[in-house]
Length: 283
Figure 1 (spheres, one colour):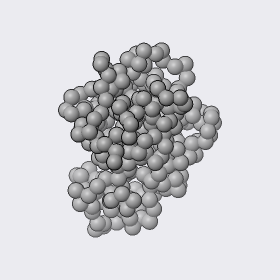
Figure 2 (cartoon, helix red, strand yellow):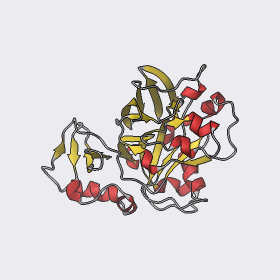
Figure 3 (spheres, one colour):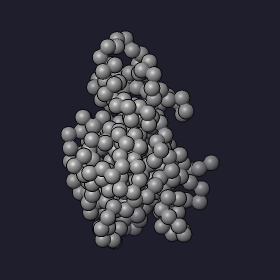
């Protein structure tokens, strides 16, 4: 099942994307895609409910796609998790996963504009596989990790490299600018993804392919990440964990290249659809 949310900013309604492309409105189910939904076996309940429904309304194909879940308690990111990306960054693979947070206020729809922040000169792209927690996770054994995953989603972990790396403090301020976390177009429930460690990722800027990799290049896979993160914090249903980006980011190019107004970023992951953002300057 593919979970979507459709509508204007702040007015999104929950829906399901069918195989024929129909966007079915499931507002009558009575729940949005939030912590309570994911923590109460929502996808399975919704699937069972849909079997008894007929003549549900549909959203128009031109109506905006919003982020496919409501604002989660946490958006956790993993840094330097692809071998080739660590190499292009000139660093060794870390002996443990690198963890940083991204403000949930950065979350936007998959095709919303990417807003280049004020005083930014180094806004960069990062295609990433993210997953959504479906069951509270605390001190989880690695063997049980995937039992806590509700689904998977495409994420562009935008970064302002000067804010992130050249100014005093943590990475978070270079990661959390408004619009820096487009999610979607949909969340594919876990049963739709047979093996999340075999998915192709790609990203283009103005039609030029710059990132082209596979999740098999991850240093730390999803099973380990759920286990590892749960040793330090409780992961709540609906939390989003983004698993790192492959090589080909603007910072790693020679010379480095960054986004400017008018640039078009297109990205996709096997079985998780595609998204596209147009870069605009902050007002």
